Image: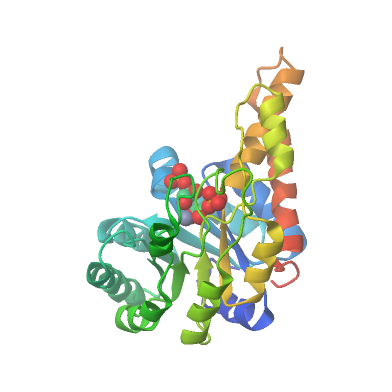
Length: 312
Ligand code: G3H
Ligand code: 13P
Ligand code: ZN
């Protein structure tokens, strides 16, 4: 199967009450770990590349790695997506350079400016059959000392979503309902809780339209502990409870972004391996278990959280 857009994936996910996993890729082992799990579990998948990933690994290397995965995993649909495209030029570069989906993230800009930039990207992308994810609302940075009303202001305002989607023509919309990027999503001692009321209000106003969740890693404590046991220092790393992600996947949420969980898996595994084999220096020796554990982390997401196993 050639690279696909997310259109069909999202239609099926919306109607089927599950979500597609969107996993960030930065190197060969991560691409392999993710796609081997998806091929074995017969799950459609989105491989996404951030600006930082393009700076680290180079656009061409990443596209070629994903093309290799498409060839190695012939039974599953794979989309190649730009994560958090910062401007029109970066989106255009990726559209021209083989991506099937781009995100334009102008969510930090005022509403009218966000609409204008997003509309411009949509116009260009659609000419080439590429789909566009946009964002409205900014993800909560729960570590900040914010009071409730300030915190509220970073959630997506449901009353804005119809106008935004209609005027931009975007194909999916990322909303802010209490998730955040990274490994420290909630204060220790507080109860992590997503704003399902905001999600359901957006869902009601955009019937049939795919919603996206960013910052949706669950920060597996098994790997946080592994990191801390073997020389790391990540106290109070807390993620989104997986039962809440499962609940979101049953709704209009069709794409769930996961990056930090893969980073924790890889780092924990390598730290443990290094500590247990102080004389080893062949990178293949420690990257092999790291890749194998990424595969298992992804498998768990597909089967137990996203519900997309067997949906390819
Ligand atoms: O949302 C951001 C993703 O986790 C990618 O992170 O920009 O460090 O590559 P990055
Ligand atoms: P996490 O940091 O929760 O993995 O979020 C990743 C993400 O949203 C990528 O866009
Ligand atoms: Zn994100």
